[in-house]
Image (cartoon, rainbow over all chains, first blue to last red; front, side, top):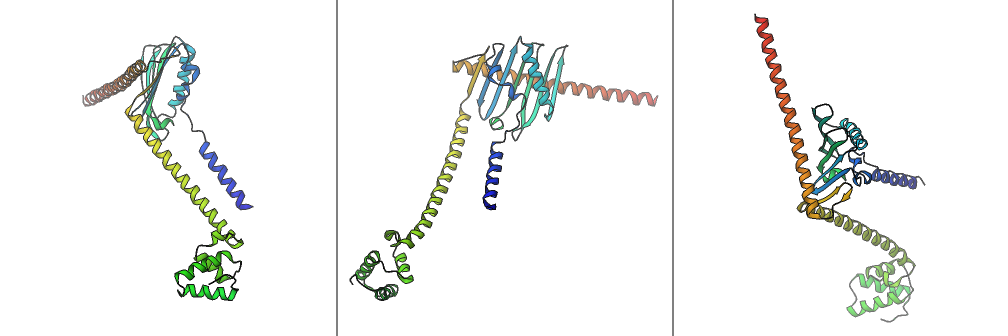
Length: 130
Length: 167
């Protein structure tokens, strides 16, 4: 009986480990259907040479820009390096390097043109996002 | 050698078989007798095993053995299938990755609508990537420049401070 319980426990633990959700970068969660198919956004996704690149450009939507700012601020906390430049009152650029999915250098770039216009991109090895 | 042997006679034959005292024909006859007869003893059963007749006979003892064998065979087949699947998946994944390395896949949405022309999508996506890389380089270069300027100013201030203290 004990043996069976032990086996059952091991199976449960194995299943839990296999299906455990990997913590996601906040920026990655921006690439969802509702934002990809939004008429205020342009999205580009490239997979090539083992690299993954995706960008989201917002034109004329403050809500989406705020959402992106929220995500980038959340990811800033886990970034290993942050480089920022500011231009004027509203616009600024930010580059984050984030250790993610077992890889050191996932680059996240954010370019805020105004309150309603911005662009974010993520670039790194394909395997990091699996 | 005919069937209708008693257990002692059969055991004597079995002993002769082990002692290589039987001709080829007699061995064949013994094999046939062992298949047909219901007589059993340790020596007879062992001889059946040695002659590979257990599986053919399908009596209780052999059923026990073959059940074990069957389980073992099932396990080895299952293990082989698992290993084959594992190797297959690994090879496929590697092949997929290497084939992905050769080509570029691009998905582009403009104002929420997908660009269906692949070549056009690739061109747009590549342009976008180049712009992003340029922006990244620009930000890094700008911050490095500012850092250098700041360091230069700091050094200048340090020199001035030293001059003032000397005077």
